[in-house]
Length: 223
Image 1 (tube, rainbow, N blue to C red):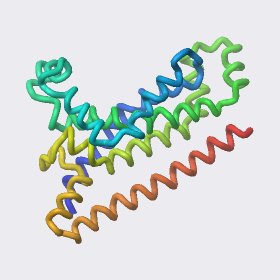
Image 2: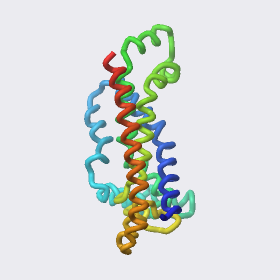
Image 3: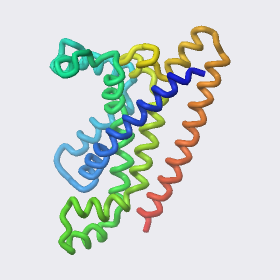
């Protein structure tokens, strides 16, 4: 069992959730309550990581993070090091790859809030920020938890993007999914099986949590 690789995956998942949660709340709220021309195009763009092969996303991110781009050059000017093939680069790539897993559950949760509840808050003179903080977020919490669970679980199991952007650097960018691949290549079935079992359990628990929370959102929407 490669505990270092597991910890790197867990740390990557936690950072991804921490950075994605406010972004998911903002975009989910915006898409749920605003109708504008091009809304479907924006939704389709945000959902692209769901259908694009991970290696394609990884390739484009690796290109964007390279030293020949303003992003790569700007990062190197600020930190003195490259963005690609670093843990920080993995975080940036993971946030981008997990956007749909954070935005879509939040959007559905906000859409499930009865319109009359929001209207009552606005009639009481609540500002949009106070309405969000006092009414909408407390009602949409199942969507927030679903977004966090999905983003964390998907980050733990991601392989293609992690390998393309971070490489396979022991102790820095080698996640548990890459460690499993390494063990299989080395014909170490015991270690590969142990790590695969860990991901299997995490995935199963995540699915149960998501389905349970989806039922709660569905029941609220049906009221």
